Length: 312
Ligand SMILES: Nc1ncnc2c1ncn2[C@@H]1O[C@H](COP(=O)(O)OP(=O)(O)OP(=O)(O)O)[C@@H](O)[C@H]1O
Image 1 (cartoon, rainbow, N blue to C red):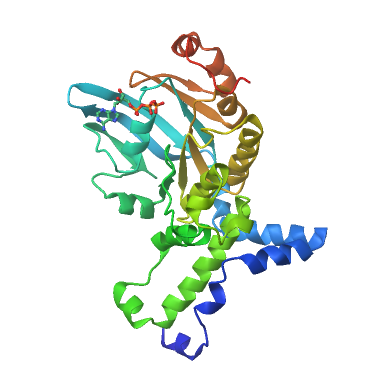
Image 2: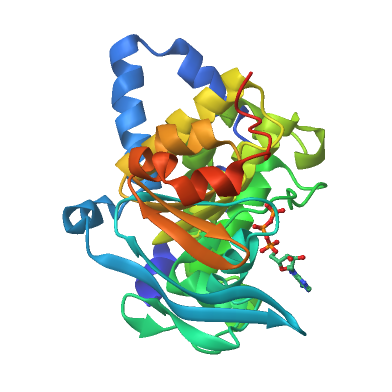
């Protein structure tokens, strides 16, 4: 830390709200732009070598039961999420999808069973500890800091990774300055990755709905998760926006992340996922490749009469 003291880092140099970067992008040639995009991808997913291990189980739900009083919201549900895949979690309204997310992210404690991340039980860890352990999520109802800029919302996400303690922060030691600058650079790269760098300086509440959804994803990615859980990220999107979102989710996976996707829109689920788990009334009724699961009679029956908002 003493070695850092000689540096002339200032917090100002990183805290530009992003307008400069956007103008710079506009001036780039095609080749410069591609090189820049490669740098951005590198900043966004520094751990992309994890893709080498595609296939081993990252998270395991082992006989997980969640009860609310007399209601069994999840009934001995077991499935694994493999590293490097996009797993779809689908099922009619009230099937238990969000409860599954909540059990994974520490919002609810399973009444029975276990959630294991890389073979280790999450146990009674608090939500922030689970974020640090590597699970990030977005919400069905967007939850952003409306008065903060888009950039600030993502910087807040990077805080989960910071090592600077309260004393360093109070004394404003050099490591804090460095971390602040790195956080802003990383946040800018993430905004670019999700396609909203030009809105970096806008307050979150003033962003169009689609940008807010993308911002939530950027903020979740800022925690450098091993597992990214997306709860109905396409809700309220038109078909063109859904296509763009699917492309983004694939890019996230291709950059080395593992994605769990809750989605109502069957077409979206079938088009983007590697595997699908289907819940109905808190029970797992099917698991497999999207094409197989889509033809499973139990799944077809579960979805009969359920409007598929993906069909235009
Ligand atoms: N905090 C809670 N208290 C009581 N019951 C709850 C609670 N959360 C969920 N439930 C109930 O548990 C069941 C599963 O709900 P959950 O929200 O997980 O379903 P879902 O598949 O995500 O549905 P949707 O697609 O409508 O979001 C439902 O019957 C729901 O009413």
